[in-house]
Image (cartoon, rainbow, N blue to C red; front, side, top):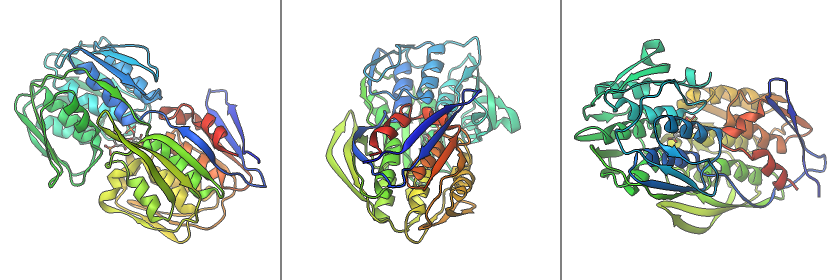
Length: 449
Ligand code: SPQ
């Protein structure tokens, strides 16, 4: 048995190149692994813990850079959050409406979820002034999607380009409730408005064109908020002047992180891998449906429910994949997995079409342009569409020099593509993986046989 050669090269600026050399005799992906805690649930557990009365205990928190940014911001706002680890994190909440006014700028780093959800809370804290910023990528991502509905609620927010880009300044206000019909299906916009509604007298309703991930709704209810949900219209209503109470949260493994191993197991011949303890909330399982349409051999074992979220072990064995079309209402349920699904499509027979995913252009990078360019660099046949990609699979990929563009999901998707490409692939700026998956390279070494 032979394993891929993996080398981490540290550059002068502390950036890393990940070099993956596939042995000529090939390799397979084997074993039983666990992935780190779900990023979306980790953010929400820290945030709701911070605004609840009493203590919240979190098990399985993701130790990636994004939840660290959330913890740092909410500490500055007054919550007591113990040192972060996966076993046990204690959050002593300060109760809704009790943020301290920070002396300095809140920095969310690379995390879109932190800034957008936190804005709903900051804007609804009358009498306090806040400023928020993030890294280069974050400062170029659109904030108008949350600023506009918050302004309809009477929020006062200022920023560059017509208040649409961070850094943002927020003068907290007593807000008024609204019914917001969002033009996009977005869990970040939905959560921002629901969190603003929590501290606003009356009932605030959010309606979206397709259902996005519902972790906020599940957790808000568990913490004691009054929420009504209309699945027919994808609407959620929250009752204001809420009181939340600290809870025990057990964070399941992140299906977005599991997706890298599911695709690796599916495309690398002779593979048989189990990813244990993965969250399989139906608003996140679009990736399983897409891979099933492509003919992947994936089974859900040991299905159970853990603190309000469905969980399962996922077993993948390699198989010949075929093309499919991924479009419509499934998109919000697999939006973060499209880069790795593009890798699967590059190894599938036929032409895979991905549409209705223009949102990818405003993630940590423009994920349509970057994935198309980087996969093509390896010999794939990817054509960009305004709202997706057309990928003709079946051409063998060759090792090449590629770049993550500092986007964690791009870095890891390219690493998986490299496992099935001939020769040597160098992924520049591979350190980006630590945003959502700190031990990615260690697990990569473990599963390659
Ligand atoms: O937090 P951030 O940077 O926006 O992270 C991403 C990711 O790939 O990890 C998006 F780039 O995930 C978002 C996701 O795309 C996390 C998220 C959430 O936790 O609510 C929701 C999705 O974004 P959106 O805009 O569709 O609501």
